[in-house]
Length: 124
Image (tube, rainbow, N blue to C red; front, side):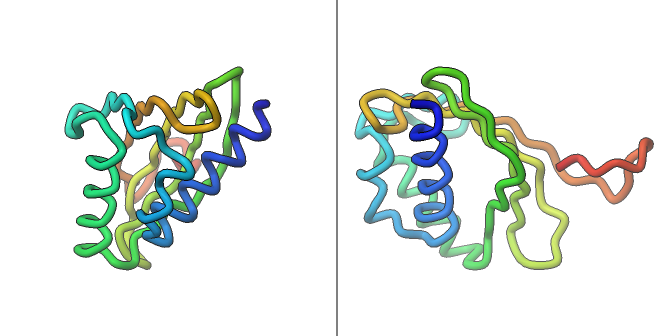
């Protein structure tokens, strides 16, 4: 099940977020999505409205998925979000809970990509 859940989430991120196909969100996201992002209300409609608004302002925005992990019904995605090519962007970790084949719950954390790090290692 974890491989199916991971495939669902990565397809969702590539199709709905990166391609802007919000009309396909019902294939991936439960209508009553529980949202733990403090800036978003619950529900699939709130999420698709946000995506459409962001893509309207940032048409070249992109999530480059760097790594995933899964544990039971949870899928973790570590990605590099760039608002436009050539910009530093943000390191993002999204956590999705899958229920009945759909994303039912979402958490996220993010940080700006620094110009340099003390260790010399990238943050994504």
